[in-house]
Length: 172
Ligand SMILES: [Zn+2]
Image (cartoon, rainbow, N blue to C red; front, side):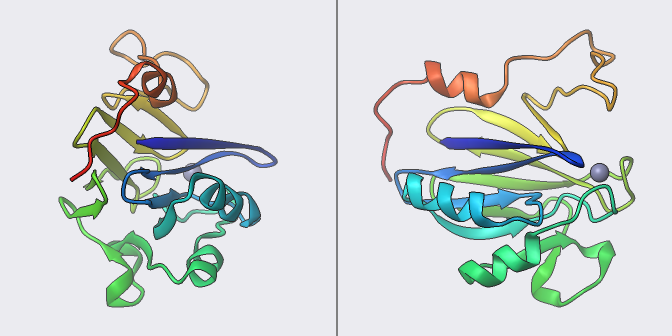
């Protein structure tokens, strides 16, 4: 899996581009309003953006999701409770395939009522959880204040795992 994290200072947010290098497909999660960095990362990694997903839509950052989806001709997806067109609706337990990567939608209201996490499985390697603003392997995260979670800590993020993963990808 190829994984890029984008950190944004104003307002503070994080967004992600990740996917299957072998089959040249990726998704973008929680893009902010400036879409150029995602287009550039897509170009650099040779992966076409096939889905654009917002984990939630409240106003702590300005989403570039719709604009990015339009620019690349990919579906824009958000939890069904937001409403919107049928083809934009994510449902709990829904699974999506992005090359060798599988995304499973978990409706996790809390940060906001419509919030979803994405359980990301690289069928050739590893698994991670992507949720609003943070991502850590095995779904562990930290709170808004950066404190450790109630389970006593977090594991290295996927970026670090990727560095230690076998160099040769498997192709299906
Ligand atoms: Zn938020």
